Length: 147
Image (tube, rainbow, N blue to C red; front, side, top):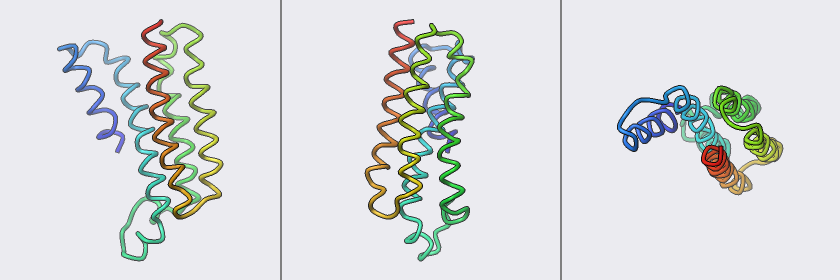
């Protein structure tokens, strides 16, 4: 999932816009982070649909590994996304570290609710996970532009 939701679209978009593969030291960590955060949208979707998927024999990650494990995977995916960007954060001004701090705070808030929610009540968390990815992207772009 990370490959198709992060690495491929981010790196090829950068290549198409710049016409070169320069900057891969920044592009690759960012693309992995975006892929991890985008994959979390699928985790929440599968988390919500677990019972229906299991009933029809659909073997999603949540059906296979269970809610507890995938809840932890959701949490760690968001943290890993910020950690994989350490080489990028070190190239930006100190104030840019507010980006991962804000993201982690938003991510933890959704994760805490994810652990206590099932079924259709997860729909707002699905949207919130997507919004968190958008917030991260906009904050990161802003930090990069004003660095």
